[in-house]
Amino acid sequence: GKNIVVTGTASGIGKRTAELAASMGANVFSVDRNTPENPVGHFTPADLGSPEGVQALIDQLPSGIDALANVAGLSGTPGAVLTIAVNFLGLRGLSIGLAPKMNQCGSVINVASIAGFGWRPNVEKTKKAVAVEGFPNPEQFCKDHGVTEENSYPTSKEFLLLWTYKAAHDPVFKDRNIRVNAVSPGPVETPILKQFRDVLGDERVDSDIARVGRAGTADDVAPSILFLASDGARWVNGTNLACDGGLEASVLAEAM
Ligand code: NAI
Image 1 (cartoon, protein in one colour):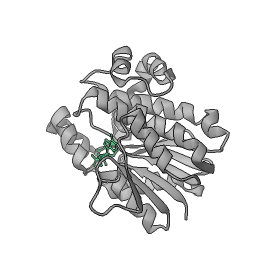
Image 2 (cartoon, rainbow, N blue to C red):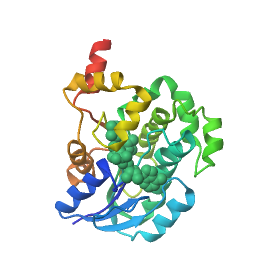
Image 3 (cartoon, rainbow, N blue to C red):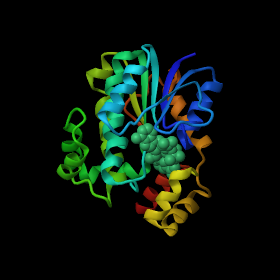
Image 4 (cartoon, rainbow, N blue to C red):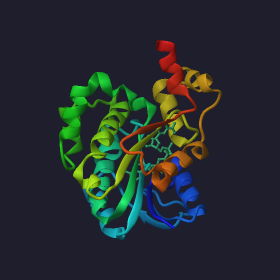
């Protein structure tokens, strides 16, 4: 089996992705800041919102990793600084830092969101933010790049999507033939959805769900993540796979 690292495995999409990978015979290294009751595979607790936490995790993981599924994420409710630190800076730091421990033809999968699809109108701001290397102080980074309490969630996913496209051609990954792709869910029934409801309002979330008949489940999303981790996706690089039951298509078609 392949060696796969999955983050965010204490809950929701990350938990289901780790379980599905294990059931398919993968050797799973599961990661979360919360320790689950029944962790899947080899569990390592880690805070992915700080450079120290990210480095400690990299040091503890073995070499020979085939895939990294970056699923851990925050809704914005815990604050802009933490949200940008986990959803973008920590995720990117882990991916770059783990690359030397990854096998040839490996795969990095970033769970973004359809909430991040608005990066094009903000492309200049997004490019500048993504060009900042390393793990800058997240508070200063938010100030410098227009990340506010109101926009931190979509902005973190916009930065993540643009970075995914860039990373697919970054020698850090490309020289090792590591593919970098994103999966973007629409509304999914996990604990984070309650927080999106609080921020966006039930009306907005329910109307999105009504467009496609139901909310997604973690079971709906995990196979898309594992497809991109698989050899069957060997010619898929730098893409963003919407996994939203057709929600984005419905919004786009209506706008045309
Ligand atoms: P969830 O809240 O059920 O799970 C997120 C997990 O990430 C939790 O176990 C949490 O402990 C972990 N995490 C948060 N901060 C961390 C940190 N600093 N270090 C380590 N682990 C940390 O949410 P869900 O739905 O499973 O979300 C997974 C991903 O999917 C997130 O990136 C989210 O933004 C994305 N997503 C979810 C949608 C939804 O409606 N559920 C919609 C679009 C995207």
